[in-house]
Image (cartoon, rainbow, N blue to C red):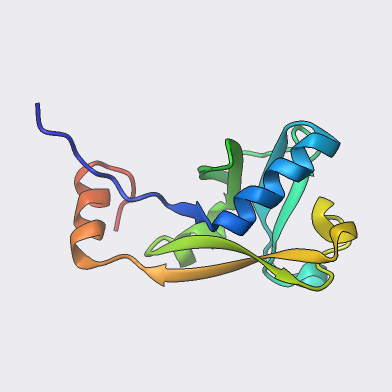
Length: 129
């Protein structure tokens, strides 16, 4: 059987995965939601699992560090051609995100999917164009 390599919609750097494990030790299971702006810019927000209510207009993009990562449907439409890469940088981030007291913040980087990756996503009905 042919194995299809579907590119992940969201990934995390090793530093991010390390931070997620430290946060899990303090707070238990986690969840992420890509902020849409306003107070916290466009930072990924980290919460204890279940702390943020997920609605019908939220899309499960994937997981990082075994934690679900959501984005609003309207943002997904704008960013669906990109892979989100979650990183960690020094500084204080969103006041509602769990990593804020650690002296670091999560940061979303992105890259466009290649034509080949995009075709795999469309062919496997992971996205629609």
